[in-house]
Image 1 (spheres, one colour):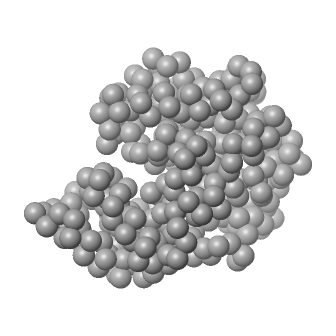
Image 2 (cartoon, rainbow, N blue to C red):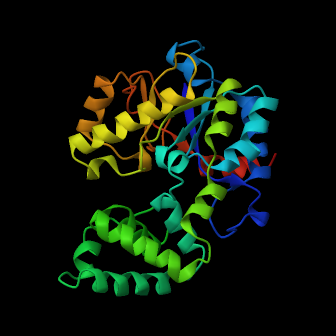
Length: 305
């Protein structure tokens, strides 16, 4: 068996810039590592793909999404100390263009003001930008079920992540940043994500880096041509990071993809794709649709170590 485990924010939560943003405290991460060392064999992406492990034993692969500088500051030293090869997935735009991903911009906004106030401003800006439609038309399209978020939070996230037209939601995100946050986008981006130099240092120490798209869009919201542009851009970025041959892997932003995505990954010779479906990988699973447990599924365990 192999359990792929998904991490996002791993930080000193009390002393972070936005302590209200949900994440895994660094001490709890260390507790999880202690637990996993006792119960599992750690696999690198390469060992997994080469089937260089005992299927009858408990194995795990640690994966880290979005390219946060937390991963360099906190995760990387711990992995080195414990001889663990993690797998990291960073969007191109955070490194090459110092862009703040919409997903993180939304996190920052939600951490800066109450949900109801944010929703009021979304409605206000939406009517200013496009008063031919009603916001309720888009809200009706949203599935508000969530493992972790309230209904209002999910509505805010989905409106700004995928449901509203791209130009409308992008403009509203920037306006909300001006409404509720003092820092500008570029300075926030530089403080949030890893740099290319840091990524190369991690690669030189055996860490794996794969694709997380160019702009962290929901793949299913893009047509096939747009998806391929995202994928090719991420391949070119990875080519610039590696000085030797490497294995192409994909971590789907938001865990989202469709049949076109799978065809494109096959066309461009990707060897592995990671979803956010919470279950254990079994040998019959599609290698381009590997499930992953969330760190929160191990959270109480990490607290006890």
